[in-house]
Image (cartoon, rainbow, N blue to C red; front, side, top):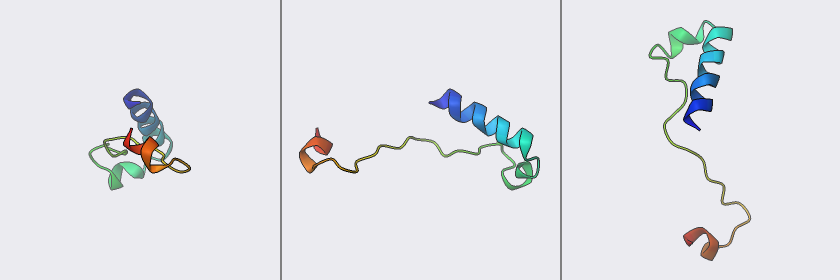
Length: 47
C-alpha cells in the first residue's frame, strides 16, 4: 500500500505543481490505512 500512496502522491505533485506550496514536505497522504466495516456484524468486526 505504501508504494501506491507514494507514487500517486508524486504524480499529483507533478501534475498540480501548486500543491507543493500547500504540502511543502511532500507528505500528501496520512499514515495508516482504511478498513471498511459497513455491512459486517459486531462479532465479525471483533474477530
